[in-house]
Image 1 (tube, rainbow, N blue to C red):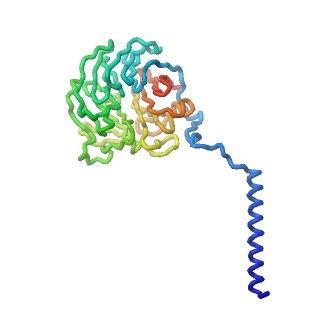
Image 2: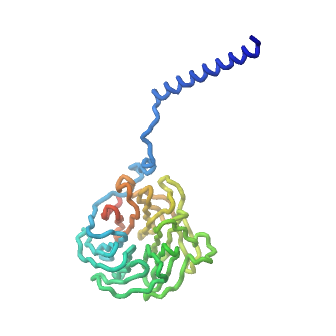
Image 3: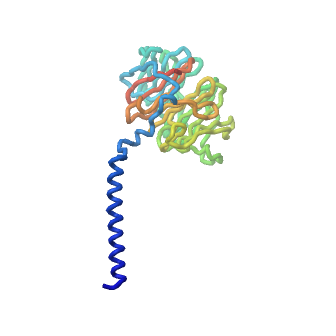
Length: 320
């Protein structure tokens, strides 16, 4: 046998021995350090107890409504809008009033003088707290889908998810300004809305904050429609927003803190007025797996009301 053939056979033998040894080592490693197969996408949303700054104090079960929007009256009454209905409840959840209307109530806001502004499909309807229809404004477009309303003194801001625009109205229904026009030069004024979640809110000083959900940003606009400030980080970690389009909803406390809700990784969180993370309010373990579209409202005592459209419940949280 030639020497180079012997060398090849010896080399092959060494490779086989190395392969067998490697298999045995891997087998023993699996016995002593088994792979954790229990980790799943659900574990991403687990929130440690020390990060949760609120507690659930009560829940209200709704009936005969597909709820979508919630707000709190100055006197503490709860307004819930839905598929073709809106409700007025007392602070304990007892139904006081039920009004049926012909359009879907995607969103609702209550003014300081107790007027109810209902996003009824493509237009706004105005009711008093006795359920009397006072006015109905003409839609900007028949194809509009209104998903958020916020009222501050004599002005109204409205989000249109279909046309990807924000409208400013005066209290009489005159359209004053539009943000998100096709010729917008500001990057953050081009709203990216992959699904029909598009929220906004005035803060206590009248500053308007709008979610640009596809960018995971919350943006403060000046009165001329230009961007003043923005915040928000992309990521599945607790401080960030993930998925196609989050946060889905926001609300703002008296001191300027932000309450946000998310879909995908379903959670409710609190941020300081500069956008830095403060604490979690609720995590995925407190909601059904398919939950999404958690609308938020805040009462005069800064209790947080979270509307769950899947379970048809209102969950009320307060600080620990």
